[in-house]
Image (cartoon, rainbow, N blue to C red; front, side):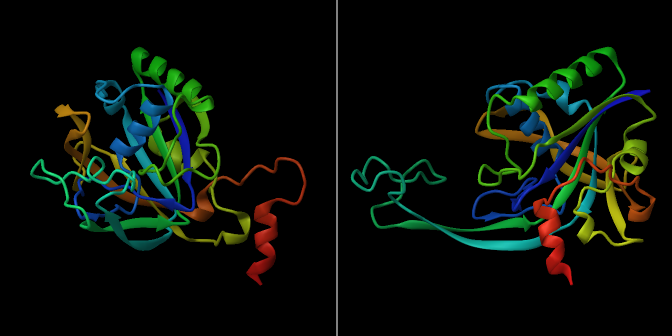
Length: 258
């Protein structure tokens, strides 16, 4: 039996970069384990450079409730991006340890997911893991640092914490049979396959998104994580529980669905 911490990751923009960096900042089609671990570590107030092995050791899985649409931002940065009154002191650094000259700039392309909704889960069955999940749950209720969905410019639009479920049959069972579909009712369609990406030792894909030892706060290292891809049919998920009455934003948007 495992304890499972369930998170809802939704917002106008998300970006889960995996191993991408420099001038092209891509995103995976689903949250990375390193990104979700970082979100939890920030909520607990852990500083950069903290050993994340206890969080990385937890089992991780994601359900894609709404894949969203890809947005590419053509991003420019000036040489004096911080303080235009003192450009010599505020020039951006370059990869070779120097700084951009006055008047120079940088160009990058940054990829985001628009309007995506994910259910992420962390699970553990040992006593120390159960205690850790309980501490993460408490931190998500009152986070020490602001939470964001992959990048600081991507805040969540709703509370991230869904629930901490005790003594469950496992992470995959929770994602398949316990957590309702996390999209507004007016957007739900029957018989829609929702992707599941689950930690699995013999998984068919390796993702380079597991925090590893040997990195520095600003040069982090990652190792491979084997995952298994499967799916659940939306109609098989449990129904949303109605929480009172009232005219919510979701209800308002449903009027536009005609």
